[in-house]
Length: 396
Ligand SMILES: Cc1ncc(COP(=O)(O)O)c(C=O)c1O
Image (cartoon, rainbow, N blue to C red; front, top):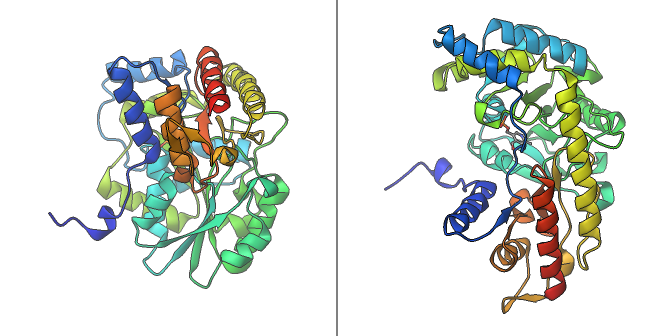
């Protein structure tokens, strides 16, 4: 069967693929500990659930405006103004079916086949495939521990071309947990303004920052960059609402109007009663978040300490999100289960088969020297997982 060339060339999300393999082993009764999921192990706060249940009871079950309920767009615009220092109107806000959907809309609106999109690596797995689905080319900018996994002005100068349309910036980052400072963002903004390059700023982990790190929005750095930047965010990570599928984007009016028009033909609105829940989420008292962040912080420090104590493994301390991204290239050349390990995929496979631990190979994020573990899972599982990894590392 001949499928479209564009879509046939897309690959399955590797995080989902390793998750599926882990589930398959579990379904066979095999005791596997999975660190691959990118979702909070906390439950959605009760007040948010109650609002959605009440909305259902009240018959709030019809279409809403396809770009989102006016009250929700207004509340998001107020949040962006007060928390992120991004002046905007509700008409610039597009509520979508997850941040993933918001990103997809924005790439579709901005990119043509002749365009290039700069993507600093390590990157979140869906960016390259979403960009390629528009026909545009992905230009990966490698970064490393040496630069704190941040993109520098020299990197931008080296990789930008006359075809560069946009840059994707994810801070706090999945998978590295790096958080760009205001100065870092200013460097990126200055470059993009000078070259007229759009910025797609994924800020979905904005509230999950630790150890004094502060999240800033690139769109807050003045009107010139604001005219080029689209900020993407969502409810999944901050309010433990992954299954609700709610995200949003805000940006210059022409982009947002085009994205809303596109969305109106593809999916229409995000689920009506979920939007009612989101309205309450924005008013969630900070203690829910405070408790969640404190717990993630505890796990983060534990993971970094344990990983750095393993021979051949080194782990930069992440400042945000809920992942650790240790460098495991020191294990390459060793043998596990009769097989010589040469890359992150082989390490991930060996960990699953020999240690019964599910991790995501760094290759999926554009960095084959590393692997990603999510610490959005219980402390007991983390302790046991680290014990298993350490025993395996010491045994190979
Ligand atoms: C960096 C990043 N952006 C976007 C998303 C998508 O989030 P949502 O659940 O809102 O679609 C994820 C989810 O893992 C993510 O890690």
